Amino acid sequence: MLADGVLKHLTFERQFQPNHANLDDIVAGRVLAIRRDFVWFDLGLDIEGVVKASLLAHAKLSEGDLVWLQITRAPWPEIGNTTQHEKGYRLTPLITLAGKYWLHNPLARRESKWIHRKASLGRPDYDPELVTEKEELYRHAIRLHVPPSKVYILERAPTQWQRWVRDSDDDVRITCETPAVQCHVYEWVSTHYPSKAHVVTCALQTEIPLFETYGVEDHWAEALTPHVRIPGGGNLDVRELAAATLIDINAGSERDDPFQINLKALKSIVQQILWRNITGNILVDFIRLSKAAQSDFIKHVMTEFKGTDVHVMGFCDLGLLQLQRSRHRPSLLMELMPQCPTCNGDGVVQS
Picture (cartoon, rainbow, N blue to C red):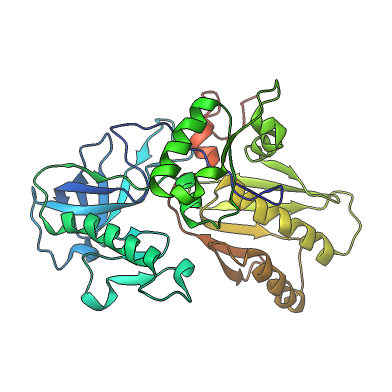
């Protein structure tokens, strides 16, 4: 996704697979095992799913029971695992149906079933678009009041590009690589958001690929390398580990004030977190600042991350900036880079 010619988000999505569920899909799961902290479910997929036991404490489940669930996190490849093991689906019984204007919680208490989304602020509830979407979400929700009779996927959620179309303003433009892709995209947009069908276009048929035309290839390569050059001098060292992602700022021969070097690095860090889809715990080792400088620097950090889903937790006693981002889907590195069979992902080879 580009805004004013600048790459904001880079998302990788696999083709449709019948034995694989995506984020926010609604599924019927069968209880496999009940433990103190987690309940394991058979989803009829290649990988099982898990729910925190505290979310199902009121349900009084037993093995073999069928329950409606929603996917909150896709299968997670474990970094550094030589067997390429994947953690299962993370699930929740608190199902939410999302539209452009409403969030509907069909299984919640009556007073919290319908929640306005940002796009509906300032618009009355009797607005035709709000009423139409509310009726559509209600039709989807009716099925959830009937207990499931088998293990299957009840409803597939929109993909990332479909969410962008749903939530965007009218000035969005979708450029497709080939006529076949354009036909697929146009059909979906025309069906769900006919007022936006005119925004779907096809790239000019030239020898230059679409991603190369917009400079996406360079950003794609940059998002998969551990070393990133900082505009104006210096570089970032980005390392994704199992428990956290570590980002280190190297000033190199840069002789500017440390505060200014950190400001330059901050903009690159925001870009890399979004491009790479880095989630979980993130620790950033800036060039060492005094306690007073840290307090001033946090204001710049909050400004840069404003409007993103990154939670800024501040500096710890070791002088590292702590960030957190909810884990919903694997990063680009996990999705696209297979583990090296020689070093088992450690990045070192015995001499």
